[in-house]
Length: 209
Image (cartoon, rainbow, N blue to C red; front, side, top):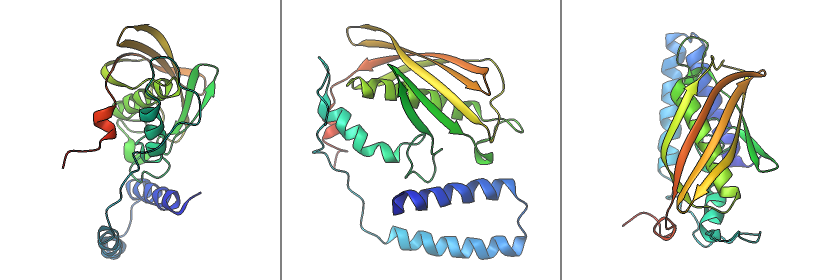
């Protein structure tokens, strides 16, 4: 694990522990002082710049944008759901089963909605990122137009949530992706989303100055 990923994991753990534990006021004050000092040290570092010259290692599929997909792969460590170096994310992991992307996430106390349950917005974020990973692995650069989620049962905290997503249909620029989420084998949610392919080059150029 890289140093950046270790820092992110420690911050994620701290956030969940602060929510889940009754810390003494004096300890909270000392902790706040220490964290404010650490935050100042990080803010004094040079700005981080992402590479925009990344190239894919695999052959692109017809109609794909390999340079954009490769850039997203390079930035994947910062992704809010599966990015291991994102201190505010979930630290989920994913793998492929044929053409299906499987993402496993354990939602901690900081992302609770109802007591003992994951917030529905967090679940939607997991679904959206799993679906986006489907497109990335197929060499497709597209953005979410709409996402429809049907909640079928509670998404428990502290237990693995397994999301499976796959490409269901493609017509010109419109791509439909479907997904299912389960916990301990029980259905938690089903979802369908429409993605629209876009020109990746404005994204590769970076934010306007």
